[in-house]
Length: 332
Image (cartoon, rainbow, N blue to C red; front, side, top):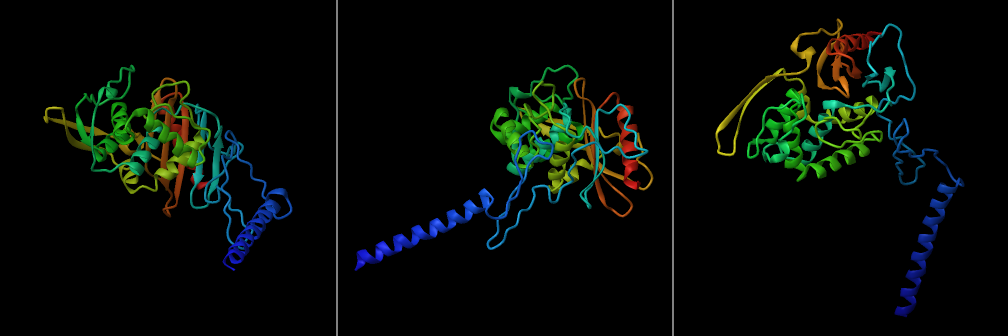
């Protein structure tokens, strides 16, 4: 009898499996409800996430709570000047106010450091001590540096503040090695994070944004990355800072001072946003290859949030003038 009972259970399991397979087959072959949502690595709208629920036929798009742009939306009265690409998104309504070349592949310069900071916040600990190696010895002409030397130490919290406020490239290398174990592994983590966010038109080759022919992203992908980084309280705090002073230490334990102001000219007061718009914070980026770049979080008089991005303006003044005009779209 025991053998009969065992066999009966076996057949019951087989029948149950067949029922599940038949149900899945009907969904996948068109016999049941179908959702035409292909994933394409180079697609303008990056990806979709199908969510199945018991006893329902529901598909939730990946971009359900995101702004989605396919073509240019050039709002009347907004002139971003020489900028190669620009976008302005209303976060509360998930709507696109302005889009110019949102999906064009471009160099991001130090806007890269947004992803560097987010990966570090996700996988690191703010109180962990980072120790510099020879990886911080950057010789790129004109690269922003604080002069780190092998053996210098600081906490991740200190490093992230210097990274985002002053855009130090040697600190980017310090963070990458300290959190990722190696720069190469950390860059792989950055690219994996980009894919998970749907930023599939992005490829990072370093944590700093220094020039590399394979280091590319888009204005839209930067919106996705910045939007995700804003979920971290520390990131929000840092991008609003106007200056930062701290002490870190060399290999012999001797103190080294850091005291610098933000590179964001809106926060420094060099440029003013349109009336009724408050610039909360953001990230700057400049190289010869990338031109002048800027991403911002701003709010209107009611406190509603907006993300704006400009890539490849020809000069700093043109970048901030163009961003000022772009932010006027908040009132349109």
